[in-house]
Amino acid sequence: RTTTHWIHAPAFRKRYPDIHLEEDKLFVVDGQVWTGAGMSAGVDLALAMVENDLGSDLARRIARKLVIAQRRGSEQSQLSALLELDPKSDRVQLALAYARENLTHDLSVEALADVARLSPRQFSRVFREETGQTPAKAIEALRVEAARALMETSRHPVEVVARETGFGDRERMRQAFLRAFGQPPQAMQQAFNAAPLG
Image (cartoon, rainbow, N blue to C red; front, side):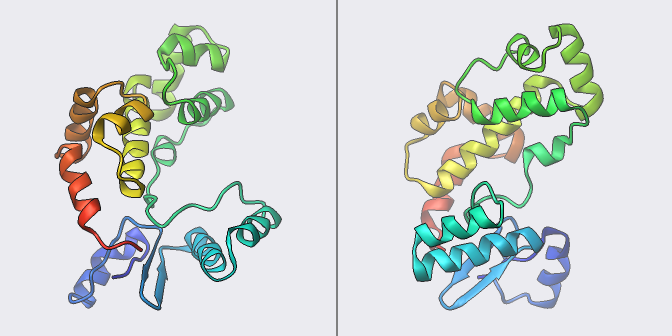
């Protein structure tokens, strides 16, 4: 099992058809072999190695010295919903950062506009101009990303994952997963549970 930067995944598959590539992972640990997906993922990989060999306290101290807010786990996707949105203004960035940290809160246009210190109408217009999406679609993408990560790293029932990521109920989450991935969360959760840990 291995990973590589997502842009090189098709070429890697052609060149090494017998290797199981997990192209959406930041890093993969398979026995004594550790592989990373790129420059910043290499830092995450190195911190994971320090944590594995010398403990989480030292890994945290090193991350602090490197001015890294937190070490990302291997299961985190290489592609981030926030990076895909790529907002330009500080106000929209602030609203999205608030949303990502508060997925279980009210994230209506009115609430996000208040965080951005804009009127709801002005916020919706600016948000769509900068991201190409409505605020509702962007919030759904953030919640889907968080739910997928939670399912990969825990054994919580789908109902708990839906509640913890702001969907409220499993049906709303199911519809969002079908739109994003073409399959329900239960199918993805079964695949995560069957996959070897790494």
